[in-house]
Image 1 (cartoon, rainbow, N blue to C red):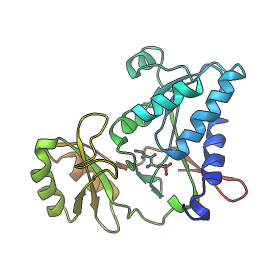
Image 2: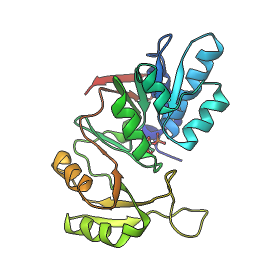
Image 3: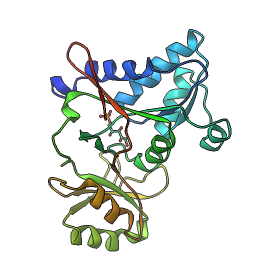
Image 4: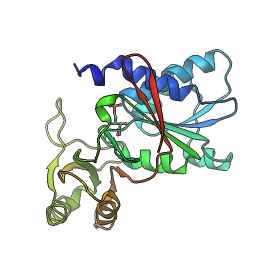
Length: 231
Ligand SMILES: O=C(CO)[C@H](O)[C@H](O)COP(=O)(O)O
C-alpha cells in the first residue's frame, strides 16, 4: 500500500482530469501504469456516453485495458496516416523541472515513441512523483546479448545497473519488445539532457526512461483535487 501522496484516489483524480481534455474526434496516446489506467477507464466511460475517440496503446497492458474499457484502437501507423496523435496521457515514476523518469512498467520504449509523437503530452501523477531533481533509477531497455557491454557502459557513466527481475518468474523481466531492462541508479541527475545523450549513444541500448523536455503539462492528483502545471 502506497502512502497518502501515492494513493489510488490521487492517481484517479489525475487520470480523470487528463481524460477530461479529450474532445470528439481526438486520437489519444494511451499510457501504461496505474495512473494512466484511470484515464483509459474514464475514456471508456466517455465512449459509452458517445465520445468519438481512438486510442493508440503504449503497451500490451494498455491495449488490453483499453479493449476491456471499450476504447476503439488504432495502430501507430494508422494513427499517423489519419493525421497523428492529438494528445498522449501517460504516467511517470518521477517528474522534475519538466523532465521525467519513466519505465516502471518497462514500457518506456513504446511510450516514448507515442508520447513524443503527440501534439500534446500530458503527464498524470500523484504527489509522490514530484521532485526538485531527478534521482529515480533510470530504466534502460537493451538487447539481451548486449547486457555485459551495456552494464559496463552504464558503470563508466557513473551508474549502478541492476537487472530487473520479476517477482513471479525466475530470471529477468522481458519487455513487450523481447528485450531486457536494467534499472540504473545515477544518484541525483544534474544534467538529464547530457545523460540522455550518453545513454542513447550506447550500442545495444534500445531506449532509456529519461524523457527530457517532452511533456507539455502535468496533472497531479492530490488529497482533494488536481494541480495542473505547464512544463
Ligand atoms: O512509465 C511507466 C510504465 O513504463 C509508468 O507510467 C510509470 O511507471 C508510472 O506508473 P504508475 O502510474 O503505476 O505509478
